[in-house]
Amino acid sequence: MSQVAKELMALTGNEAAAYAMRQINPDVVAAYPITPQTELMQTFAQYVADGLVDTELVTVESEHSAMSACVGAAAAGARTMTATSSQGLALMWEVLYIASGLRLPIVMCVINRALSAPINIHGDHSDAMGARDSGWIQLFCENAQEVYDNVLQAVRIAEEVFLPVMVNYDGFIISHGVEVVETLPKEVVQAFVGERKTPYKLLDVEHPITVGALDLQDYYMEHKRAQSEAMRTAMPTILKIGEDFEKLTGRRYEAIETYRLDDAELAIVALGSTCGTAKDAIDELRDEGLKAGLLKIRVFRPFPWKYIQTALRGKKAVAVMDRAEGMSAVGGPVFHEVRSCLYDLGDRPPIVNYIYGLGGRDVSIEDIKKVFNELVPIAETGKVEDFYRYLGVRE
Amino acid sequence: MQDMLEIRWHARGGQGAKTAALLLAESLMGEGTYVQAFPEYGPERMGAPMRSYDRISSKPIRLHTSIKNPDVVIILDPSLLADPSTLDGLKEDGIILVNTVEDPKTVREKYNIKGRKIYTLNASQLAQEELKRDLASVPMLGALIKVTGLTNLEDFLAHIRKELERKFAHRPEVIEANLKLYQRAYQEVKSE
Image (cartoon, rainbow over all chains, first blue to last red):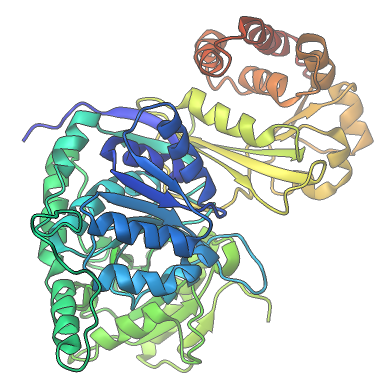
């Protein structure tokens, strides 16, 4: 299929998300401001005030109320979106599970930020990682372009698999940085996302239904089993929507992205904005003769274990980068899951974990090269002495 | 153009360095020109030292890290030069552009700067004259276009006019004052 007309715009990550939302024209947005999400909702609220969208914007008194309003709106059949960060996501906690348990296709931008205490407004993945078991699909974006693209795809993913979707991007680094974003015409976006179709609507009085009923020992477990089946079978739909999107834009979206990984001996696994820096670092290391490569996780929930297993098979050493401290005392959350999915490989590579970039700590090309250089002796000996490491911290 | 040009702005909170960095990126972006602009957010306080950054490249920019070895350092408040870290990492053949009443030679001697190319502009006064406000970031952007040759003045002003028309549609006098200020800065920036 031929590609459609595109427009280049200089946008922050937040503006890219807001612009995607404008083109989606959701029925309901309920939100409460929090740094670094604020600029997104401020931009979107301006679209509402200027009459550029038909959205009912519900300004609430907290994130708990924001997600509650989204649950109500989505249950009524409305295409529903919101956005938050950090403490805001934490305050939504119990309602996150209600959104996913009720199988409501809400799309939420999570502008990743550290959690207090100590108080910090900058980018890390502590907020999203805490929500990894909440039953939401989680996509991670490397740059402002991916923010725009993933928000558009998230609407279809949510509505086709009946699960809510979080679109994650790094606070300030992406949310407040201006980059060049290629956008689609509104009518193309409208055709791509289509109309929300829902089999059950709360407000359809001709066909009354119950939402959020009591569900005790007799059926709760079957409902959770069905919910987990939705997550287990979501990936083909996510990939199919990625293919449709590629036909429109030429930009490929899969569960994972690999960069110079096929013939790499040393690999790092990361998600979010650091992946871009890692690509530049890898190019430099390749010039220096080191066979380095990157595995970027785009879809973190459902966890793409099969793709990761295949991509890392036969590597001589792997480092998993965690921009969140899981406080498990044995490494970060991404590390645990990546290491776990390598367990079944006969020739599993030695693997280490780096906690990095907490609270927005800058990550340079030199930092990434240091990780690769520390993988060299591991690849040579096949031995890992200390797998739980920190990058760029004062000890 | 070399593969990538990196610019670091040094200013005090409230001087408009964040907006200027974003405006520069927007004005240069186009087919085959990739840009990135980002501020360094600390505790937000009027008057506190702050930095913002621009990257301009002929290739897509993948880096998401702060700029440690800039090609250009722009200083909106000359008192920031008293802190030697202001020039940290600036390339040997890099450009220093300062908002000051002094000329480049005096700045070089006063702060004992070796190498690099120094340019100065009395941007605060120019802004006072044209906008009746010390918005030094506006004329400094005009001077930057001159000293880097990133684009020509006409294209730059055409873009700025569009931006200003969006914001100040009901105040044409503000648009004209801004455009005149950019032009004056472009002409009046001093080299050694």
